[in-house]
Image (cartoon, rainbow, N blue to C red; front, top):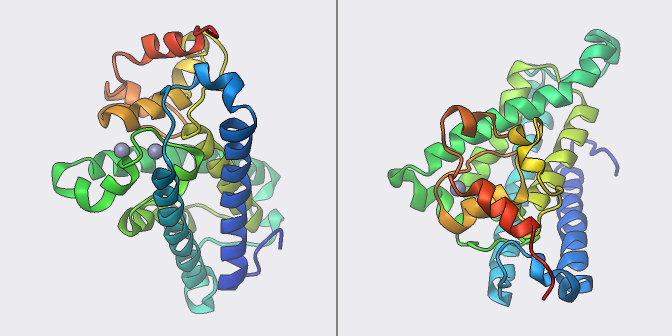
Length: 255
Ligand SMILES: [Zn+2]
Ligand SMILES: [Zn+2]
């Protein structure tokens, strides 16, 4: 079950296990076990209520169906699969490419995400595609997949991009989706994990943080990136209060 065999059931099992284990673990550790001790460090001090968690989980379940159906339709159908860039022999594109593929996928995904995300913030598209995700103005880890079904189709579109542009193996998809899920849960965690002054370091200027994405949920405008801040910096869409918010959250002391 580590790698799905191409059947809908195996893909859905992997996708849902990834969500349940990663979002569930984060929820258990931050929202239950350590809650009292670390509440003062929460990016937005209040906590979501039960109906927020329920909505986030319900939409995430629908998303997981869509995130399984689309890969299954493409990779489970030999007539379509033969037209993709899918490969199974590592030597076909070399070991160097094998290791570079996932970093390349992350850069491609960040770019795809930034532009589709900004597009879905267009007033004509926002309500239909993206409002569901923004109902979580104070997101929890369960919000990681809380998308309207139409947005879920847009989000899984990155897989279609890969399958028709760059060579991909099973292992690439496995590690890409694993990393995506980990970062997605971190982005909606509600707490910052990077250290003090990280956002001022040469690398931290280009890496997205939980505080950055939390601000996007709280205010709706600015901070559109996913893993990186390249596009937000190029287009000047980083919120002006990002640096001061980072400092404020990280420097909070327990009462
Ligand atoms: Zn948004
Ligand atoms: Zn989000």
